[in-house]
Length: 138
Image (tube, rainbow, N blue to C red):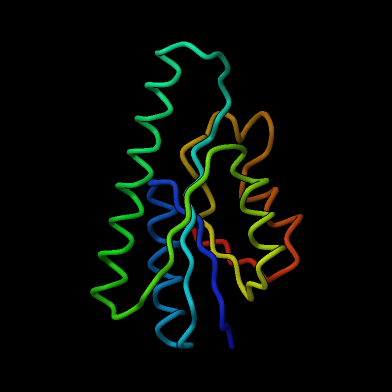
């Protein structure tokens, strides 16, 4: 059914449930599973404090991806982890549209709840602009 699945994670409870669902589907469908975490880069400047903040966010992303690798390993699923810095929606849309995924799995609500009220959620933007099927996990 699904041969190649992309799942986006950000450390939120919703993303953890989405990852669990993606692992389940990958196991049932014998699919390849790619996991992406995008560090949202919405601040400017080139100060040492900004650099330190970006490094802390990257370290947090690596921890999240390592947790995903452990869970996948326990389920006998091999995954490929990806991380990037930038606009999460644009990055996920680009990955989904340019890499022949059959399915993109995301949580319905990430860590940016306040921003969601003002600009629309990352999940909503991805759902409207990806070519592949999207599964939104509550």
